[in-house]
Length: 98
Image (cartoon, rainbow, N blue to C red; front, side, top):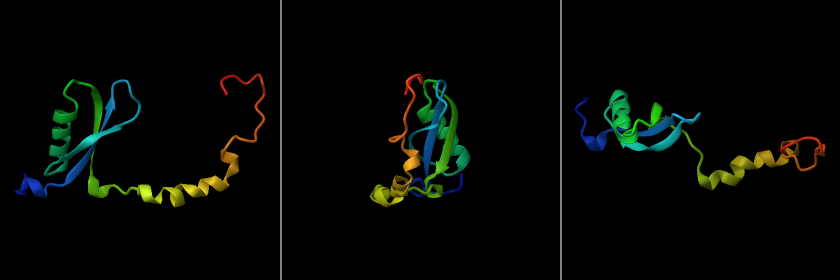
């Protein structure tokens, strides 16, 4: 351990991939003094019932995320790409599940 006080430990975000899942899912956050202890603590806290097959821990400070306030300007550029929206395509009757 690094001699840091618990209140100074960095915050980690925890992602777990379940046995039946293909994707890692954010399950929570925790504080830990280093990456290896963050992984151990995440295992102890978030996979108590042997439900995970893989765990990721990422320092929160390493994550860059958009803000919900930026939703309109960030995602608006896709609105001018009408070819991404199948609203004007004719779908043949023999194409199933559309």
